[in-house]
Image (cartoon, rainbow, N blue to C red):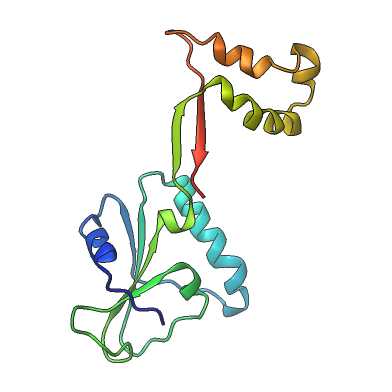
Length: 155
């Protein structure tokens, strides 16, 4: 198990609250479905519950978790704790580790080159109907009443 006690993680725990964290005390499923269950569950929870920043699962002493939890959760021991088998631990899944944080900003004309392939894949007729530079024209015609925003994901 990966045990983390870094200052960054400890400062993150200061921001855990009932308003932004789902505390799970019991989680049961058929082990045949572990790999089809956990990832979609986490994805759905973080996408549908926009206020949710953390998911914490309480693990009682002497309870072994599935290895797949190591892919999504960090095991936390109480301060001074050293042995997973003898004390209660917590599994922590952080939204940013699972879903990337988006930066939303006003669009600029330079965004045309990045946006065009997205539009071509999903709405190829727009270029045919409005011309090759319709996105750039839309962006340049924005005013106080009409704003055009783009979202960026830092990778």
